[in-house]
Length: 88
Image (cartoon, rainbow, N blue to C red; front, side):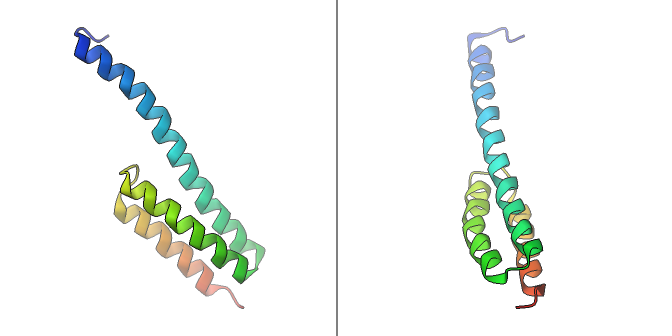
């Protein structure tokens, strides 16, 4: 339990930040899954279009430091490799 007014305020802020960060992390996972689903679907054009939109989502979440920039780069690299491995 927080003892000072400052600690109580930081605890309140942490609850809000945690909820917001969780929703951003969920958006990230959804974007990644959308690309993976498009790759499994077999339509390369659709997978590329989904990847382009997901890339901006991944980058924006990395910019907000919800995930590390290297983790974002790793996700983008693996998704890109999966799309390139698809036959046209």
